[in-house]
Image 1 (cartoon, rainbow, N blue to C red):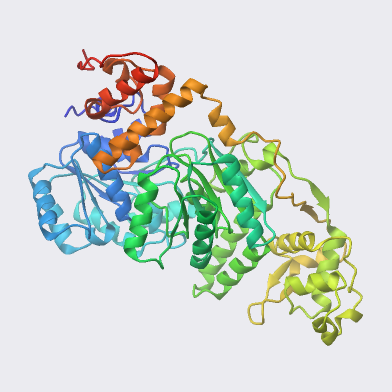
Image 2 (cartoon, rainbow, N blue to C red; image 1 turned 90 degrees about the vertical axis):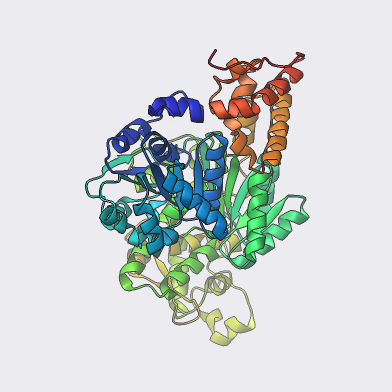
Length: 618
């Protein structure tokens, strides 16, 4: 193998140019230095360690947190002609010994291992007898105890520097705010590493967040969204609880969609089968808890939907980042409601974390709520959270495309706060709304709240409008949830200036779920690329890709990404030499699949005859 990184990029992976800062990162590792790389999902992180592992003498050892990720990356590398393998619990003892022998013989470019496997003394001794090119620590944010994907085994990875001081290391993540970055550096001993921070912006993803009234309303909104904009597309739907996952997956299936559940409560073989179906077939929707997703390499996930509020901006960014890894238009769509806000605050305060952790968790949840309730560009706020400045609004989020209305809610907020105070600060939202609306029932009469001055003073709003007011009062911290009682709402110190009329309170006016018909959908943007003939060729190429993938036992995107097929549609190569210039077509894949795709292109464009089986370099 030629050791020149650019030659490897072109001949193995089929790309003509590096993206910034890939070339600098690779150069650092080639020179024996360490690196910390922060790059968004889909930004090309893997090439930063795969190429120097191929180019340098020895084997690159990749620490990967999930078995599914190892399998996917090894399958993709093998398809490209790279000598790659993994060591994990799915192997038999005979298979394990065979891979260890290949490692010691120098027959592997890349070896993927879990942190648990790596930390075994037997594995460390094995590596000490091998020639090592580098260590790559993927998903490095797992080292942070403040993060949403903390893995205690990652903390032990500082042993790599101690045991193998001359082997270069690279830590990579797509999600890390400034405190998490500092913790990665400290825990992994990367004080001397070069730090590379790419833009966190994913301009192809459209961010959309709206409110839901109740569970049925949220699922109906989801169904309308999928049918209108993503019929036949692969997507992920996140829910907060396992019960909700099962309910939504079953309900979507009754509506004619291929929807499968995924959560830790399912049997391991069911999870594996559902994940395999998602990876290997088109148009499958996975409904999941956050147990699903990290390390999923499927590039053509066209939407990620949330039916509940994530716990932090990091979690939201990480989960939505699984959409559109191929760079084509995709949606990050979310509905949330008042109960999400209350539930997450209750879960946070009732947790077993110490006070320091709870303070950080409160800050993260407040930042997530702020992102949801703001009236300015969501992308600007999202990037600001990660320390990046976007000079002007993005034009590709809901608040840019349909600027929300704001209104002076000071008087109505005073009514809501007064009602909570006068009823003793021990009742929940639904009861307070009943009092404000002047409802007559046994409970209100029992407590004598029909004689309060706040009884019936809120009839200018309906139930859902009042729920929106209370949601925003809780989000902004003017009301807190009493965990010692029965979830009653209590006034915080922040409510006093509003109650006394010293502070104006502007709230976001909730839009109706049926709104948003003016905006051109992501599906329409994507469809505009194709004419009728283009669409027929596109579908024919996808069908052939699926057939070849099934023959090989790999996901379709391992054969070629959608972006590669789209380029074939655009340029219609008629020979292998022309196909070799399509991005994503390396030498190995050209030899393995080139004739099949040229056949399809010729057949769909009315040409006959077989393509010449020529050397693409000739």
